[in-house]
Image (cartoon, rainbow, N blue to C red; front, top):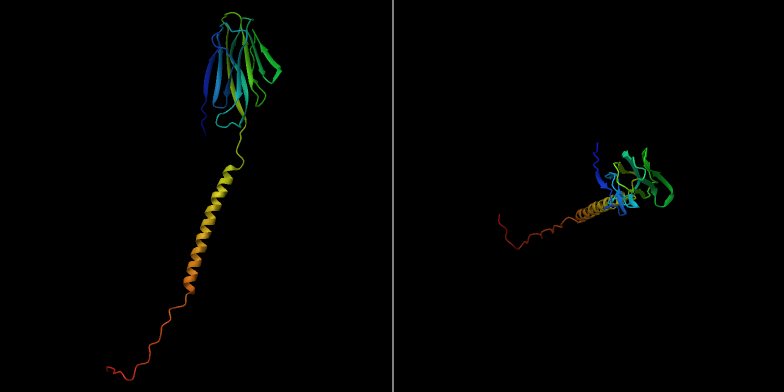
Length: 192
């Protein structure tokens, strides 16, 4: 059983903070967007992109879900859209909040807010990402293992062949030739 740890970063919306920024979301990095009724500029946009810094070829689907949506002031407006497909926008204001919405797979996702006066409204959105494609390098481990394994096998075979040839040469050497002693010299005296 593996434990999955994730980090939730809170982003509070207000007049002082609302410049457009794209956040990277993945299975370990979520965002909670919080608006507590403060004034917002005419256009307050936040972008999200399903991306992992370590596995850049993985693909994600970014989703957003309201964990709290108490909007009583109808001057508040919130839109969800994919930047490349502006025609598909979902808009929300006072009343019932949005359900869970997931952007098109592997597409960026933008939430746009606007509110012209302070209110007691509260919105909390949880932005998550689901991995839809897990990129694995094509047989990289098999190629590296095959090359290293092949090199080891070739080395072992070469050493065995060399050792066999050396021993074979030693076996082929003729035995040392013993030169027979010359016959005894009759002129020499022998001890008896």
